[in-house]
Image (cartoon, rainbow, N blue to C red; front, side):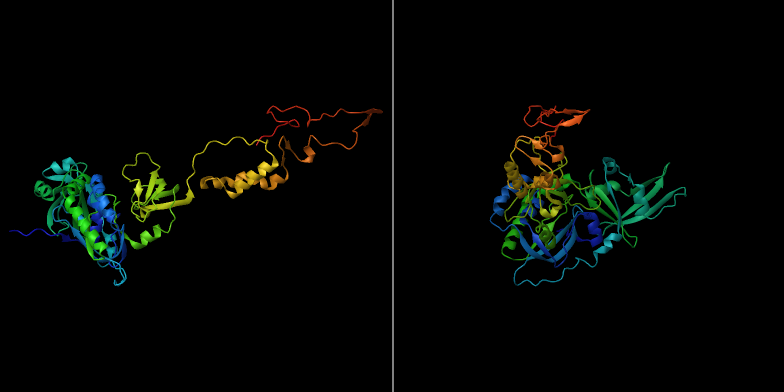
Length: 456
């Protein structure tokens, strides 16, 4: 009876290159939050399965604060997928806290790994002999070829995540010359690695020049595999949940998925910092992404769950239409606050300011604006413009219930103490003075005036 294949330990820098830079593994002895609902989502992508088990989760605490007691970076013996196994110990009064450490030596070494990812096409998978290698990969990962020679070729020995070595034959030929990678019995290699179109092959070179190869499975393969063993995965989640509830150490296995939205073991400081923000609807946020991603999606918070369950407590309306790859329900540590000010809310256009109010009425309204009574937060920022009547302009304008009065130098109702008679060419002339105040003469705009109308 043959022994069952066991997962292989993988060097940290190789593991992280295969898993993508977006995946963050907690440090040994660090403080983390374990979210069982996120664990279930990771184990069972099917929403129906999550709904079926959701009632079971209600009887347990929504999260557990733990210490990372062990970190193992591994590779699946059947699919070459990288995954991590964590041993988590719930924090109690008996748990001794140590300084966090990197899982293995110094992970900064992974920055020295040069890599190239090639997504396999149908032609690559079906070709029994070879596939094309882009120039970048040939120049930066593989040893340099002498392109001046008639036949530019070399043998390469490439190590996979399990330590097994494959022999590659690299040749550059044709006109213009193209980099081709020939592998003995390529067809059997494809079958052995279970490669299909859409899978990605990662070629890597470390600081010593040693070449490695890893595999990332396409999302359809990952979803199908998870669906086949969902019962087994859900059972593992339930086991971890029960042990966590009893404050006993428990293991979790995590396979990185795509953009890695389901990070259910999160650094304690990250969660604590995100919860220092008093989240409210209409706050503007953007999705946190790694540096290689494009401009992050932005949106407006529409709902904030006020329960003790922090998992996906924010619902966000994203600005871009049909953003299918980003969930509407997100965790606070997935997003970054753009502004504490709520987003502006559309409201009907205000009517033109009329001068048919009494001074007392205007005074009351001004007081309301100053106090902000009855106004939502998002329009309080326009107070300055609305209440500027109390500034210097107010000292020169007096509002009356029936008309707009101006300073005395322009007042049509100013009375002259004298009778206004004048001497002209030796004769006394008594001019006729029109009383605009009592007349019904109006300007073109419908306002009584001294030859011009004023509207606010």
